[in-house]
Length: 80
Image (cartoon, rainbow, N blue to C red):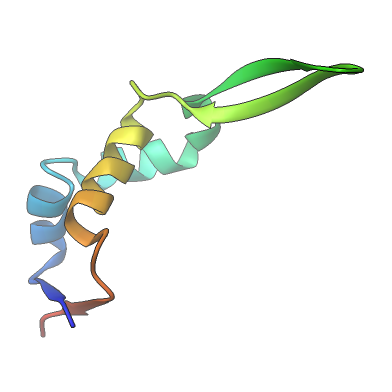
């Protein structure tokens, strides 16, 4: 079983989120709808609308950081 320790909240922002601070993270999350793009795909009797995350957005980068550090882990432990 793999483990990763998150030593402190500041460690999480500095090392896991690679320098994203708490205020910035909260701003990104609170405006998450602005980080998606609308795509239309034709189908037989109209179109299908699909919303996907913009690969250049801050939200995408945050998700990539989390996958990078926690993607293959089954357990995360916060140190006391």
